[in-house]
Length: 309
Image 1 (cartoon, rainbow, N blue to C red):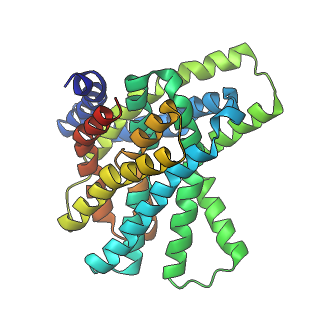
Image 2 (spheres, rainbow, N blue to C red):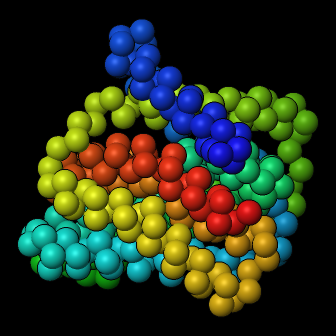
């Protein structure tokens, strides 16, 4: 109970307050759009840029950490894809969008604040390593499989350009790339720049959590509830369980193990809906899965935190 009160509830209090504020018309929908644009395009990129630019890359990007997390994520994608097709008789295109929901955890808006509250700022090193390759791996897999099942005759170069175009339109990826460039070059940024970036970074997570709550108001639980619950089960239970197994097998450090499992236990992020919307497939299911699984994370993340104690 103390874990729930001290770690999980404050995070979801901010999300819930954002939801209530927009639902009750205390905060406008246009305001939420502006807030999310600020956090997604400026504040969170600043946070990730500063994190990556100052990390010890040799110590942070451990093959065992990334393989543990992404073996679980890719397995979740496969279970979502084939489960939707075989168990629920969805079209192949819908099945890919559903698989993407099972693949794309909310590593930033939920994973970072919950991990920080549970284990401290120093525990976020592994989170940043996972986040650094999250969008490239997720979109590369999702777009490639979607184009294959649609029967598009894209050659290798066209496919690569399509993937790169989707990935590098993401401001988080741009910020991460700049962070890597600064880190690898050894360039020292002026203090006035780092202080300004840090000020923006400090607003990132609380503002983004409030905005996430506001965004969830527009997602109505619609679609096949069985598919939605299937997505929730894979995202909140199966993915972290697979990371637990693989992380134990490769003997991750305690800190990396906790970050990997807890990040894997997060609900699908808004990117799951964006991907479905991009292709016009399984949009109601994706939106409902984001909404319902975010609420369920209050309980499932508490269970994983208890198991990781």
